[in-house]
Length: 461
Image (cartoon, rainbow, N blue to C red; front, side):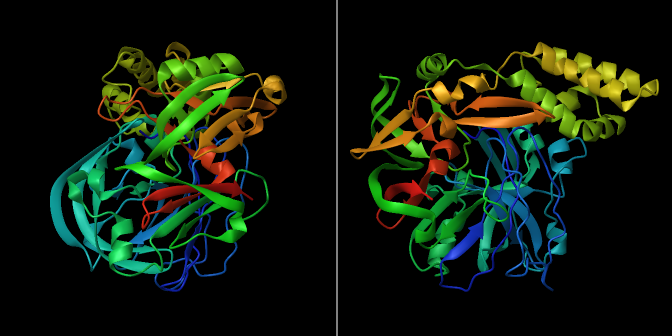
């Protein structure tokens, strides 16, 4: 159930039993990956408290994530803090050579950790943007300045999907309920509580979508809420299901049209957009004049990751393996992708320039329709678009068009205005269900009150 685009972050070491603050930072929307920028580390490999965070490029829609460390000595990873799933996973050193997603990210090596305990149980979790497969392991986890002992997590050896291939994060740390934890692995949040590492059974997300400077990408507060990040009072909605953070929504309206009445929704930090039933979201997209943007995103991914893909093909993998790594095989567009990759291999064999090879890779983008579900609008129309209104518990939460449309720069002088809505029909046992992702949570500081089984929203500063 996860979608699209991502970030880079810095850990603020806090004392045990105090509110744990994990600053979250972001890079532009689209498909990006950045290596660590040489942060100052202490003797244990953890970021020193008080150092300056990474400078932010605050354009476009984004996902928010931050660092954790696993093992002894610590191995550092960037993880997506995801309230829409419950497991912790990171790429494994045991990833096969043809898994390009693993090659682009930090990998856990259990042979280098003194606190590693073998588990070995098979693991597989499905997201809307692809699946992660591997096996379970057990080790210590450092997060927010405290250490969780005996954390069960997955070492992932398979990561199909463009979203994982191009993501800036290495893995995922789930913050949903243990009832949906794959293999019944105890979630990190439950261990933080049982090991008395947080003062209250509450955590909250501040996702800053404004260009306010260094270190202001956002914050995950573990163990409480931070009044510095919201104004006014919280509106609370009791949970209707303890799987995801699910609650009732009275209505959703746009331009006088009610698109949801007495419906269910989840607050999901791991989804970039607002997601709803396809037919209903199609209606919203028509109201705001949105159309497919997959070709532009695909070209952006080629522009950013093209050199790495060339090296990947030069390593000798087959065209099918190359297409599997970007989640196009098996599938409707597998043949198109295989043909393009074969052509690339021929170009490489004939000493083609990188520019020639990159143009060949872009042929994949030209012939694949907009199957991601994301849409764009004419940037000139944004000021005239209607507001989107979500009524929760009798309180009307309003999103302006500037809040639900994200302007993404794809090249010098060229931008795409991305719709903050996406259609997705969830399996019958889950849906119909709305997902209020980062577009909504960026406007409203979101409190996840585990103790009282409720979600709270307040206007974000």
